[in-house]
Length: 213
Image (cartoon, rainbow, N blue to C red; front, top):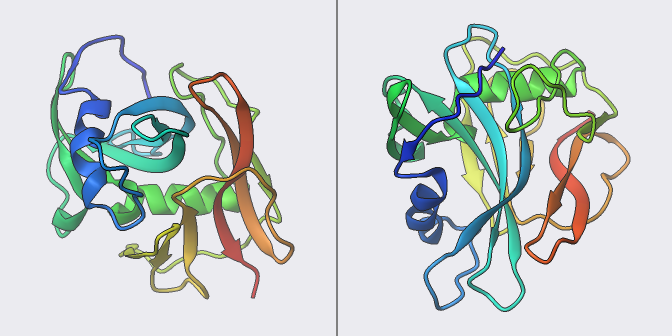
């Protein structure tokens, strides 16, 4: 169970993301510096209690019409070996001290738990509350896929999504980066969730999919 601390984080997650987003292949440049605002998301628990896992949605308000991005992140108390390309940055947590923040598509713990969610073996948690399931997150068409362990995720990016390859996966696990309202397609296991834009409008769309083969 992840314990949510009410404390300071320096720099904040949004400050880290404002610097990190422009370098991502799925980020649509607006001609201005990114202005990310929190728009939703959920958490998953690490069974070992060591890694924080958050599937955050941010809306970039630097454009005329805000664009919602899925930015899954993990929080670790030490660097993750071999994941240098996925480092978002470091931050100082008021309770836990220095934390290394990673794009979760590079983190084996996050990938394992997302697959557990797609198998119906993990419970999505509220983003800002301890030990509180988030019923707005739904899983359809559950899978039975178990990757080889230890998981070594190999993410590849497109302008809309990130596909994660790993030994034992019959097809890439896909995370939607540029979120759009809509439902999953038939023939795939999927995670759908909600986000809220700065104008207060709420949307539901597909966060992650894994084809049934």
